[in-house]
Each structure stands twice: as structure tokens, then as C-alpha cells.
Image (cartoon, rainbow, N blue to C red; front, side, top):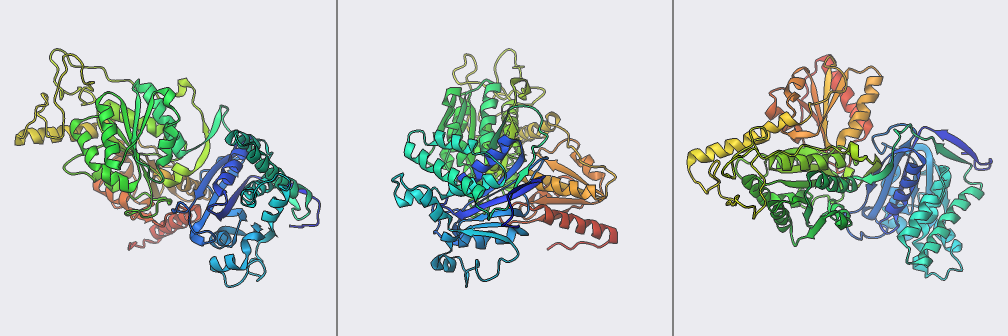
Length: 624
């Protein structure tokens, strides 16, 4: 970059920017406001928030760094990007943790106030990286932005600590100028968020404008960029996280099913935001209940289902373990229950703020006895809306608990989401009661094999319910061996029968391709991008993405049998691979990782190329 040249604007088709700093630096605010601005401008985008597990991690340490990355483009994008073209680092620790992901020759903006000797040492540096030559591969702008922020707020009478907190707005102003954005969205949000604190509004907007003007008037920024608008389908859009979209999907499902929505939940990262979101919608008949523990939360949701409500309980890995007894009670009583598991790194407390897909086998099998239930998975933040509706449809149509798997990446990530019109809402036909004459609680519908959902107190339909085995049709407590076999078979058949009521498995590519890549859940974006890139370069690779995991789509086995070579990609140590091989007797290879981060496109393209090379040369893979 020529810093002495006049400012110029360069056009880009996409860019990746990352904000990073201490967890108290307002990094998530900065990233979210920048995302909203480019979204309103008309860019396609995908975000990747990352923050410490501790509520207040040690300041200045690498473990306490918070970051927010987004890729925005003039075309469809499905990942937050592998490497960033701009890195804004608030301190030495942020630089230490994130510099490896900055492309060579790219722009690095650092706040010199975060590079005091003590902070440099705390970050693990032996010398100041701003002056030791270790950053010569990058275009560096290093200023004391904290002090510049304080200067911009002189005269407002703010305490120094409060004024320093405004530096994220100063840096946001710089970032908005660099990418030719306006301040309108950020200013409106600040005014709305702090409507009862006029001094805070004034301070943050002053800092925001000062950062923007600083970038506009100083010669150190020799150029700015602009990413063109994407060709987006006309409609009304908003930016949503996975947890937000899932909450809206549950409310929509409640409306479609004509049932009040009840959420029984216990706060746990990264699922807590669903509770926070739904608590805002009491005017739509939503009841939220924060229980004293996970078991009570699931029990309350199941109790609500028993009374005729759409019962939902939300959690993450450790909480799913605790809920298993209540989920099994729902299996036995054949009551609808939506169980949302926002997966995170495990086992135990594990990596609370990192993403993983390692709850799959527990969702499938983590209950006592033979207790099958539907398991489905969302694939993107926006898709959480549709899959929340689908989980509700399956639960209420087939009278069963349903596990909906998301993960930390798509739960916290955001993307533009087209708000559906009423005509676009996926309505489902509510099953008609097929029983005539006397009422029997376990007399099943001939099509869905589900029993009737009866609200307690309904005249003429009194019945017993509970965790003990029921006699077929009559529902009386029964310990007879033949009856237990019959009821177990009927419950299993009801679940497997669901394959008739879900879409067939789709394929990207051709059955003539050499290799089929299977993905599931939040890996869709990176796998789809990698496969598309490889196909554009002539590689013989097809792709299919699983969302219905139990039961599998009715054509899934046939689809897989058309390929001689299959590669399953997942963020665990091979759980879907193991499951698919148990359902379809074919040889499957796996590519997996479990480091708490989503797949990068580059590592997937490398793995797929390697597999294709092994196929071409006839090399037999030996997996560790």
C-alpha cells in the first residue's frame, strides 16, 4: 500500500475481515455491527464469532482473546473464509492468537496501547512484534487508537474507564470507512440500544464518527475497498444467528400446529440464547421456564406436551446426558417433545464455546432400552428456522420425542435470511383422529402409526400414562413378555416408518463420479464450497448432505450403493461414518477432526484430492 498516495477506492468480489481483542473490548459488538452494515448494503455474508469459555477470562492473555470473523461478497458464500485479508488486533495477545490466519501482504491494524511491555510478555512474546521485524510480510498500521478515542471524547465528562470502552466504536468507524460503508446502521443501533442513556449514545457515536473521519483524513490509509452487492433473490431480509432463527422457527411451528409453545430450559452455552430469544415473545403465546436443572427442564417440557402444548427443551452436550431419562419417558408415553442440542466440544464441560459434532451417537442411542427416536440436523443459521419447524412436525405428527442437532458454529454464526411470507411457511396436515367408538390410548393411526394426542380432561378419553410398559391398544400397565415385544416393535416401526414422510436424499453431481462426499449438520458450507471448487477444476467428486439421520431417507442406501468410493466428513472422530456403515453394509472412508474449529475449505480440498489420488493409484488407505 502506498501511504503517500491519494485515497482511492478498489472493487473487490469478496473479502474476509477479523476483529480480535480482549474479551472486554466489545469485539462481538464490533463484528455484529459491521456484519449488519454490509448485509444492509446487499452483500452475501457468513460470520464466525469466537470467544473464551470463561465469563471474564484473564485480560491480556491469549486464552482471553475474543474474535469475530466474516466473509462478505458480491456472490453467494457459505463459509466465513479460511484466511482473512484484514486483521484488526486490539492487543498483543489478539495478534499472537490470530496472525497465522492473516494472508501474506494483507492489512494489519493494531492498537499500540495494547502493546505495553507487560502485555507483550503476557501474550508470550519475547520482544515487541511491532518493531522486531517479524511482521514485515504484512501491511501494518499501528497507532495508539485508545488515546485517539480518548481525545475524541474530551469535553463529554466521561470517566476514563468508560471512555476507553468506546475504542471499539472508533475501530468500527475505521473498518466501515475502509470498506466504503456508511455509519447509519451502527448509529441507529446505538441509539436504540442505549435509548435511556443519552451520554453513552453521544460517546459511542462520537467515537464511531471520529474513527471514520480519522481514516478518511489521514494519509496512512492510501485506499479503501468496496465489495459489490450480491445478486440476491428479491424479498425482505434480516440477519439471523442460528439460535435466533431456531427460536423463530419454533414460534412458527406453534402457530402452524395451533398449539401454545412451552420452553423448559436450563442455561448452558451455546444454547442459552434460545431461552433469551423466546422469552421476548410472550405476546405470541410463548411460555419460557428456566428450571433449576436440566432434568427438571425436560420434565416441565414433557408435562406441557402432556397438556397439549408444543413442548420444547434446549441444551448442549452435558445437558443432553441429563435429559435422557425424561426423553425416554417421552418415548414410552409416546408424547411429542422437541429436544434441541446445540453441540459443543466435549466430553464433560469440554470446550463450551467451541464447535463440534460429537453428540450424534448419544442422540441416536443414549437411552436405556430399545428406544429409537427421530434425529435431524440443521445445516446453517438460516436453516435452523426450517429444521425447528420440521422437528415440531415430526414430533406432533408421530407422537415422539425428536432430537434436533445444531452446533456452536451455526448457533452463533449469522447470515442474511429471507423472511418467509405466510404462503411460504411449510404447513403440514395435522392427522385426523381415525378412532371411532370407544377410546383406546394406544390404538394407532393406520398411516402414521401414532397414537392420538389427548388433552387431560377430555370427556370420554380418560387413560393411564407413565413410564411402565403399556398393554397394546388399551394402555394398561402390562408386564407380559409377548406384549413388551409387540410394543417395542411398534415403537420402532413407527420411527422407521417416518422415512415415508421425509424428502429423498439429494445429490450434487453424478452417480458416475468417482467419489461421493457425505457431510452433515454445520459442515455443509465448507464441504459444499470445497466440492464446487474441485468440480469446477474437473475433479470427479459428488456431494450429498444429510439432515435426516434417523430414520435415513428411503433412497439413501440405494444412492450410496451407486458409488464405489465414499468419504464421510465430520467434526468428531467418525461417528456418522460408524452409523452409516451400521445401516448400509458398504466400505466408507472418513475425514474428521475434533479441534473445536469448523473445517476450512483448503483442508477439505486437500483431503478430497488425496482420496481421489489414492483411488487413482489403487493405494489402500490405513486409517489411524
